[in-house]
Amino acid sequence: MAPAPLHHSPGGATASTVLKWCGNGELSALDLQRVVHRLQQVDPVAQKALHPSHFSTLQAAQLG
Image (cartoon, rainbow, N blue to C red; front, side):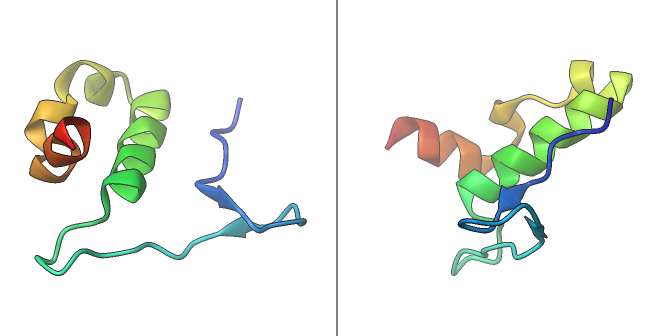
């Protein structure tokens, strides 16, 4: 089963590949969460190794 696209354009079925970046050079929390989730769907090692606590952007999003 193929992983779901990161984004869908409003009203369309095409995937968007636009990522948003924060002022500090990191991916936005939402985009990082989506990338990590997709990677975990297709990579068994990533499923066990990646956790939101590894990414400061995700930690900040969860706190705020």
